[in-house]
Image (cartoon, rainbow, N blue to C red; front, side, top):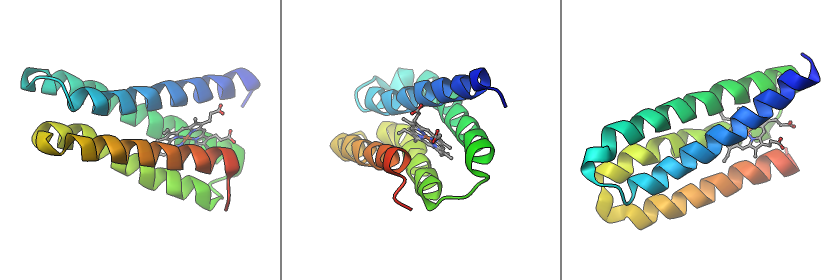
Length: 115
Ligand code: HEM
């Protein structure tokens, strides 16, 4: 894989992660009529995060590294919060805090790669 392709994967991955996180914040405040559209964009973003992440993991690390498995767990959680935020709006602050915690964990994993 050449450098441009790898750069494209990094850019799409981070952009989609921003979209995924943003959709949870939106879901915590948006009206119920926005649910379908927000869930659609959240679904597209989460799929892109997963596909680009797996591709980079394969190409650069041949699926080795516990840090990427932790990121997978963070991704699973982040993917669930948009739907949960519409269903259980009264717990919006919990979804926001968990989104920040899981995003921070994913960032620590990729930049420090502790294991
Ligand atoms: C399916 C789950 C995920 C997998 C398998 C995955 C995998 C990866 C891999 C392999 C890289 C490239 C690391 C490198 O170049 O050394 C990466 C980069 C990155 N990932 Fe993920 N990731 C996942 C989810 C996430 C999530 C949920 C976030 C955000 C909260 C995130 C944020 C980032 C960031 C910021 C980078 C660094 C990009 C750069 O420095 O250019 N990832 N990820």
